[in-house]
Amino acid sequence: MTAMLVPRNLSVGADANAVGPEDRLARLTALATSFRLAIERCDPRHLTISLQGFPKGSCGDAAPLLGTFLEEQGLGTFMYVLGTREGGKNGHSHAWLEAEGVLVDITADQFPEIDQKVIVTTRSDWHATFEREEVRDKADFRIYDERTVAALERAYAAILAEMERA
Image (tube, rainbow, N blue to C red; front, side, top):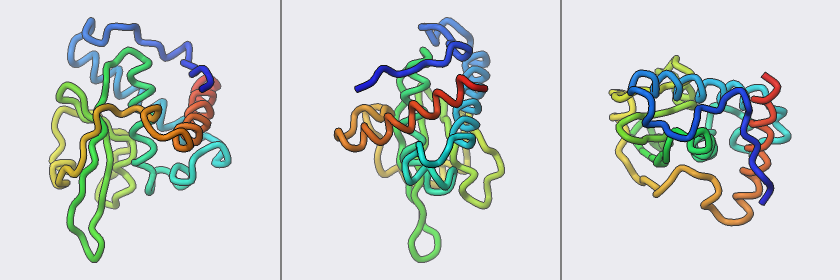
């Protein structure tokens, strides 16, 4: 595994609990927004197939990538949450992050009823419409099989490089 790049200008320190809850939400919002903008600016050839149409269909890869980044920035361990809901023939699934009562979602706007590109909140009525199917131990792309880790690691490096350029 190659070393992970951490953008110099986005480091927030090692102790996320050293700031108040409002400061933490503001910091999470800023970092999640920067991460999303970097994905949008990336050359699609450097991203996984699901991220190439970002944000549509990208939540499954975006969530663990963002979770890894936020943990590396000292903001704690985030859980990967997968929810489903009825809707039409097939229904819908969606993935996002949660930690310590805070929800972080950078792909909710793939759904037509959501305009917000980045959601960082302690309560979301919209997310509550999903039935939780799965909560993984940790939102970290490095916990997957070797092939998946390699693909996500390439995308992660491209995203971090794009963040460095900003």
